[in-house]
Length: 196
Image 1 (cartoon, rainbow, N blue to C red):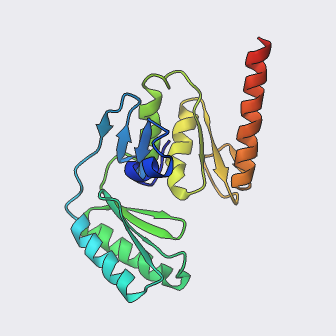
Image 2 (image 1 turned 180 degrees about the vertical axis):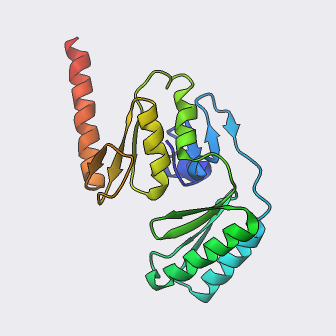
Image 3 (image 1 turned 90 degrees about the vertical axis):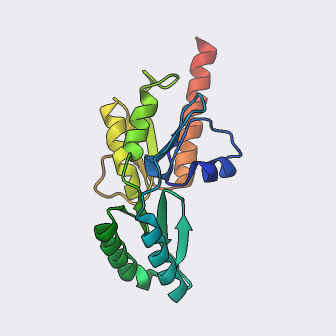
């Protein structure tokens, strides 16, 4: 599992069912053996945290998120504030050295370091993933690095949602289409193993 959420949040959502997880867009990674890699938080995060919290306090429909290695300001419920959020993110990134990462109705400022593609490549270099074909399914701009990494590892990416310029080789309409595809792949795999 490679996610923009923190590993702690992924564990909470999945009830600890997945051992190998990368969180915060590749900044933290827990290998199949349970070892955890993560950098120290960037010192500029305290400045970004204060500024994002202040803007969120001024516009209550904004949602502030703190992931320790990054901070994010979501404007899905306040689309008219999007320009102000993007502007503030750009100014803070320039002033602090944090990496600005735009997503779907969100601006995130993160500690510089690995991205989702780097996390995928690291997983593919170790057992039990080494030699497997990576298939990366995602719906956000932050997934593009992983789509490209999957292709470099002789796999492919699947973009979920509206088709756009992408490194993904395939596109599925929505989450139900993804679930249907996974069900069909699983059924085909089970049939192949039963008949062999």
